[in-house]
Image (cartoon, rainbow, N blue to C red; front, top):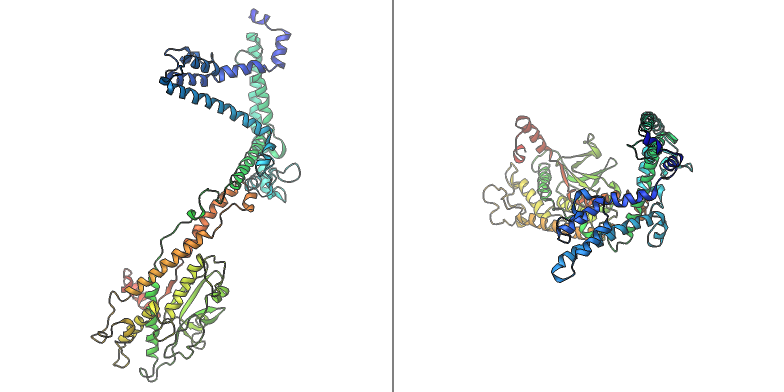
Length: 583
């Protein structure tokens, strides 16, 4: 104890208190802290037989007694430069280059921190750790919304426009909670600090060594003082350590934002993925719309049957003028969707609703087509005075189509929407004797009308098993027995509709994916690296828009009234009926 006490004097105490020992600690870092890296190099050199077996540098007990330079020099002394040692030479050179690159990375990091403005000529920023547009930066706005710390200039800590009205009551409560928490942690830290002070005093008195033998001399007290100081609550309840963390987040976010913008501005004719824009749009499988062709034949059978039953030749004193047509209801008023002249209709020349007018009228909504009779006097319980004797259909007009068809060609999702619209209008208006006859529309109408005429429960001439025989190509056999549809009745027409649909989809897909622009806009740039998520979400929106437009097929909302009545009665008795069985 006496010997240790003699070592304590004014000079030694002053050296411990005032001098941090930078040079000795730097030497210790170079030899001791990097000792494991030097040992790793030595092991690699031994693995490729540059260093001999049993070399002292490969002994773990010697870690810290030699440095990197000594290991490299020792390896160079044992390396023979000839053809037989090409593998050893290659390993030696690779390790040496890797060490140089590691050193250069540290140098570049230091230059980047202290000379950030040197990048101003080569990037879209004046300093790599400063965001040029913090007001709209998504990450900064999120942090300001969460923490609500006012900045020194009256704005927000992260300089976004999130706190235009100052901290909210939620933020004030959060600040109070942080202040309470930090005070509690500070109390614990003070107790720990006092404990260490007592231990240091006791060990100093016992060992005669300043700060005792277990502590890192001046390192330990400085560390304790700084730790306690960082826990002291400052402004708005946050302590120094928390402010340092938030400021580091601010610098890191700015660094990420500048890198994101720099990357995108140096892309040539590419989007942020670096891939061609066309490859980012998926091509979905084309949906089937054959069901609307089948439904149109049901509609035409229903329309023709009501026309027959309203005829004086069948019912002498029965109802007159049951005119079934497709209507749309606009502000409570029925408007004709397509021309569909029949024997009991007197307004067969009424104009149909064009696609351009439908877009202006209904906007981006689903348009409902009511297939029934318009009579304001009798059908007061129905919208627009149209009773849906023969069903209801819907056609989607909400596929983000920015343009209105005015007689020109529509492209992209607009072409798909227009195709669906025209197909429904053609099928519902394709009566055999009408102006829209031809192709699938005429065959669908002829099939429906034949079903109506062939099953009228009276004698000829109203029953006509050969109605539209020329259209259905069965003139030779139409009057033989009771007519029933064959399995291939719609084969050719269905194939034609399917081919037309696939062609429209293929053209729309090519036009859509070549017409979109996915470059980073100025607005997204101003939102920082957080705006990258918005951009990538835009890819999903683009794919979703095209896919939804393809699958927004016309839908059958309601079948003819008589079929719905049969379905209701059948389902009340047997809920497992098939589609055909329930009708």
